Length: 161
Image (cartoon, rainbow, N blue to C red; front, side):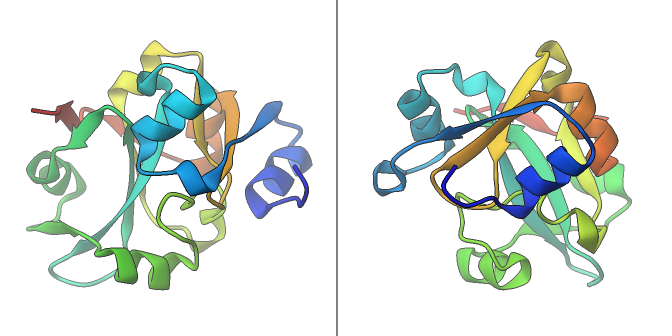
């Protein structure tokens, strides 16, 4: 990596092994495209979605595989929210200070937002997720991601139709 991002710094400080992977951000369309660019299965590339509660409060982060869709109703029920909505592109970027496609739960750890990780992640020893900037992914152990973010693991996604 040319510049070290906060997510990578955090992993280094905690001595958590990781691999940084770069791709051409100009070819970015979605997380499935990132998987294709990195030549890895879409099921191990996790996207970070920013959600807001209809009742206000802290945003939530949901991490799901690139080839899955978020189950908003299920996540709302699990998180004790009456209703959740996906933050718009502009709102997500305003809240996080990062571009869509580069939002990282690791880079937002200091905000202490609730993090939810889809249970399908447990099927993989390692996952890829954004390093906090488009064009940069980090590969790290699933267990390390859970421990570091305090993620709650639950079935929060469904197959895309």
